[in-house]
Length: 79
Image (tube, rainbow, N blue to C red):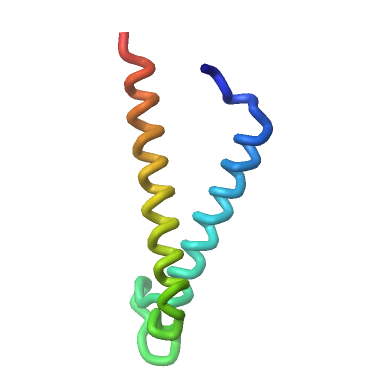
C-alpha cells in the first residue's frame, strides 16, 4: 500500500524529527561529548532517572524504525 501522501503520517514524521532534534540538543547540553569538562556542562546525573529512561527508550524506538524502514525499502526495490 502506498501511503506517502497521507497527511497524518507526514505530521507524525515531522513530530518524530522534532523528537530527534530535541534528543540531540539534550545530549549536547548534558554530556561531555564535545570535550567539555568541569562546570561547562551539566551532568546526566542532574536529570531524573525517568527522563533518562524516556530519552533512551525513545532513541531506541526511532532507531529501530529507521533501520526497519531502510530494510523495507531495500526489499521493495529487489527485482
